[in-house]
Image (tube, rainbow, N blue to C red; front, top):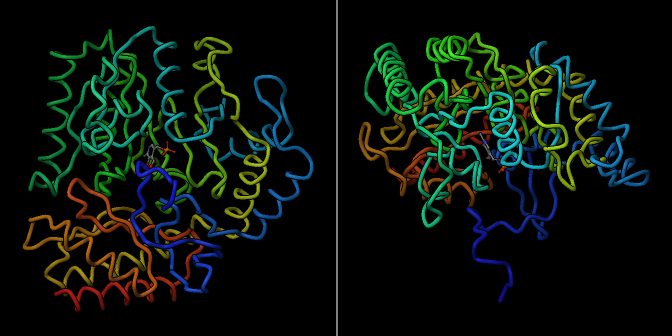
Length: 416
Ligand SMILES: Cc1ncc(COP(=O)(O)O)c(C=O)c1O
């Protein structure tokens, strides 16, 4: 019997031994095309040689240079290398370990900097599993059931889920902004509201991009009321959507940006970025942690950025994302159980249904299981587990995309 806690569940039966590029292998040499990327983490593929080499070199030099005690070179180098990719106003960067930790850091900063307590989040958002991050999360009951009471001071406004409402985009956005205004009048007075926190492309809830009108509406309201706009780029950022940051698709600039996942190609590292003047309004020394900005993780992150730049992976993700979208849209036209394709770049989801607009999580589970049997690893998301998500590494090849979609299509035929 394994002593691994049953609290930790795996969606596949794979016992992974090693990874290379888009592929995962077990000890018997079985191979899976990995279109999960560790939930969007291994952006440069498994064990990119340049990232491995950088981490290996750093391991032999300095592993833990505790960052509330000393500064270290790789952390400073990463800060300098990352800044040019950020909106110019966000000129101060703080590092943490996980996405949830960075979300909580952004929340602490927003509260300290504004002196306000409340935060507005958007229905379906996923912001993490630690207590405050889970309190901001409404993607499903999984990270809430049995945990109540959650943190107070959180209000939930609608997100433009046009597909779910069955409305067109304009009607959906008008409704959502009207409801947000109503919320500001009835539930969370702007003078009490520190921040609005949003995923520009919702992940866990089912790969829903926001719209430019909606995010610009949020930006305008934040400006008008001195509320901070915080974008959670943990899943959608770092090139995943075919641009470095997903919010740049929508013509807005955030006050605080949160990043993690792709940042260090699998080494645990997260960060928040904000204007230095805003960071100065936080309490000095109030942020940090024992393991933050680990030197090996920072070295891997510097190498990751170099790979992204040298291999032109953002443009590659946009091109390959377009190819993947075209293939998935064809599936949608030709197979009754695929209702729609959503997402941007290499962050795409397809809605699996029993008939139009009726979510079918069981069918999605069977499809993903059938693909696993045929050497393709996929993940699901969505309230009913009805969305099959496609998030290969940013350097995925056209041949790998074709192989993955062919495998999925064979499973669709088999389970029709
Ligand atoms: C958008 C988003 N925010 C926050 C998190 C939480 O990150 P972590 O699991 O590293 O705490 C995730 C993780 O999937 C995420 O996708």
